[in-house]
Image (tube, rainbow, N blue to C red):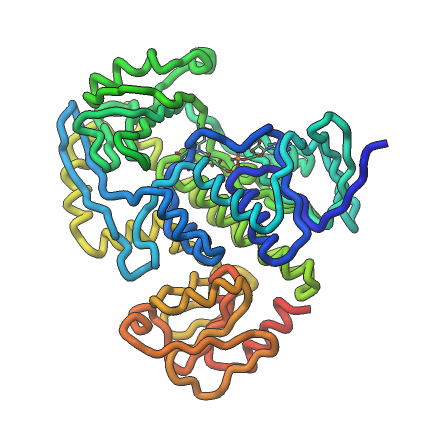
Length: 497
Ligand SMILES: Cc1cc2nc3c(=O)[nH]c(=O)nc-3n(C[C@H](O)[C@H](O)[C@H](O)COP(=O)(O)OP(=O)(O)OC[C@H]3O[C@@H](n4cnc5c(N)ncnc54)[C@H](O)[C@@H]3O)c2cc1C
C-alpha cells in the first residue's frame, strides 16, 4: 500500500518558480509541500539577470538586500565587431526614479535558488528531494498526485491545488493534456562560466556582433569571472557532442580573451513555446512549464517568478476562505497575454541577431554600434528601455480584477513607486493608498488605508489628490477612483466571498 498524505498546495519542481511560489505561500501560512526529483539544488549558473520587478517582489519578502549583496550590478554594454570596440552604452542606475532598484542585477540562478531555499528553510519548509511527481488525477474536489519517494516507495498525496513548476518537460502539463505549440531554433546555445582576463573582462556586457553566431560575455560576481554565451548552427547530433575545445578557438580569435579556467560548459537547444492553457481545474502551469523562449533579454526566469507571485496570493486568499475560487480564474488571462508577447518579441530579437542575411549583418556591424550608444544617451530612450526590460511595465488592465483610473494610474497598473509607498507592500495583503488630502475617510472593512504626503515624486508617478487606490497583495493597483463605497463594493464582489 502506498503511503497517503494531504496538503493544501503541492508544488512540483523546485526551480526558481516553484521556490518563489512555495515561499510566498508559506509566508501566508498555507500548508504547502515542494518536491523535486533531483538529489540536490542546481549548482550551475544558468539564468543570470534579475530585473527590477523581481527585486521588488524580493523586497516584499525581505530578500532584496541579500540578493543585491550576493550579486553584481550591471554597469554597461560594449559592442564589438572584428575585434574592435565599436560602441559603449553606460547603463548603471538607468531607471533612476522609476523603481527602488533602478538597475539590472547579475545574480546566477544557483545563487538565487540558494537564497530562496534558505528563506523557505526559515519558514520551516524543506524541499523534498528525490521525490518525483509521476502523475496526477483531478477528482474535482481535490487533486490526487502519485509520487515516487527518495527511498523508491510510492505515495499518494491529496491536495487542494497542484502547481506545475516542473520545467520544460513538465509532467503536470502532460497530464493536463495541454498543448505546448511553438518551435525549436536551428541555433544551439552554449554557455561557459570561466575565469579569464583581457580587454573584454571589464565588468560590462560585451556583445560581438560581426557574424550570425551570436556571442556575448557577461560579467559575473567575483574577480575575473565571466559567462560566455554563444550560438552555433548545428545538427542535433553534433550539438550533443559539442565541447569547449570545439568552440574555444573561434571565441578566442573573436574576443581575444585569455581563458584561464572553465568552471562549467553546457549546451542547450532553445525553443519558443507557450502552453495553450495555464490552468485546468485544480492544476496550474507556471514558469518554463508554461512558456519558454530565447534567453535574449534575460526574461525567462523573471517571468516565471512573476507567474509565481501572481498565483501565490490568489491561492492563499481562496484557501484562507477570504475569496471565492473564481479569483483563480484570473491567473491565466493575466499571465498568458504577457507570455505570448514576450515569446514573440524575443523571437524577433533573436532572429535578428542570428540572421545570416547581408542587411542584418550590415545593421549589426555598422549601424547598431553607432546608433544604439547615441540613442541610449537620450534620457527618454534609457527610461523606455528600463521600463520594458525590467518588467515594471507589465500591467493587468484587461483583467476582470482591474477597474477605474485616477490621475495617470489605471486599475491593473503596477503601483508606481514614489519612494515611501513600497514599504507597506511587505504585508503581502490588500491595502488602500491615498496620496494627499482625501475628501472622505476611505474605510474598507479589513483593508488598511495608508496615507502618503504629496511631493514631487507623487506628482511624477501620476497619483491624483482625493483619489484612492486599492492595491493587491502583489503590488498591482486593482481599482483607482474617488468613490470609497465603490472600493468596498469591488472588494465584496470581485475578491471577498
Ligand atoms: C544551460 C542553461 C542556461 C540558461 N541560461 C539562461 C539565461 O541566461 N537567461 C534566462 O533567462 N534563462 C536561462 N535559462 C533558462 C532558465 O534556467 C529557466 O528559464 C528557469 O530555470 C526556469 O525556472 P523554472 O523554475 O520555471 O523551471 P526549472 O528551473 O526547469 O525547474 C524545474 C524543476 O522541476 C523539477 N522537476 C521536473 N519534473 C519533475 C517531476 N516530475 N517531479 C518533481 N520534480 C520535477 C526539475 O528537477 C527542476 O528542478 C538557461 C537554462 C539552461 C539549461
